[in-house]
Length: 269
Image 1 (cartoon, rainbow, N blue to C red):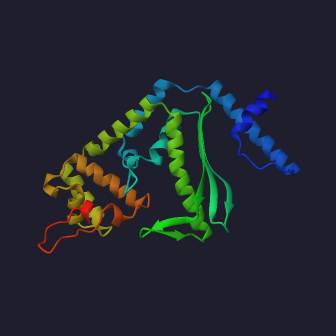
Image 2 (image 1 turned 180 degrees about the vertical axis):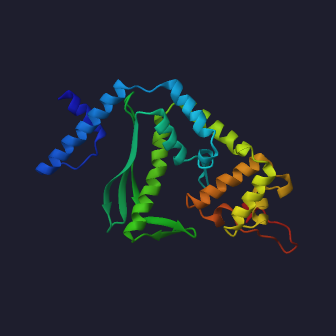
């Protein structure tokens, strides 16, 4: 009975009510799954040397490094949920996810829970929060009525919380080393010359309707002065726009000049 009470904390919390036989069976099954996961984690503990070696190999590949960071106006930049999930997989014996606890379409609000649980050490991080059925557009809140849009909005916000939960249960040294390797991989670019990578990046942004002038204004240097660090930044911005849905206009704003043709700094507009 004690084991049952200890495991119940890892199950979705539901309001107290009379449950059907089907619900009772489902709850028992969920408890059994949690118990089995803990048992397996204790029987097959993680290999620390293997985890670090696999992390170094994964972060040394451009495919992961290009998705390892995000850049969002007004929210800053940092390691992405893609990196968090990959590190959790490599570390092993980590369960994580997002649960939609409730949804009130009339009130336009959902209750979301994001969690990460190291089943081997029993370290758990979770956060429960309210998500309005709205999104920002043009500096204003825009109500969401389509069920698909509401679901995607909940999952998008939940993913950010999952990222933080995963990084909470993983060792700081492990996460920081992974970021350092990913940054180095972005700078090296799998050995491709910087000039070639710049050409590729400029063409990729041109395909999004973003001119070279806007890139130079954002970086603060002319194309001929760009180095590997600027190329790495370009890659993060491109991923943020194409995969994370960041608004290109807010991340790379249009160039504004005064009557004399001088560039007006973004911060003073």
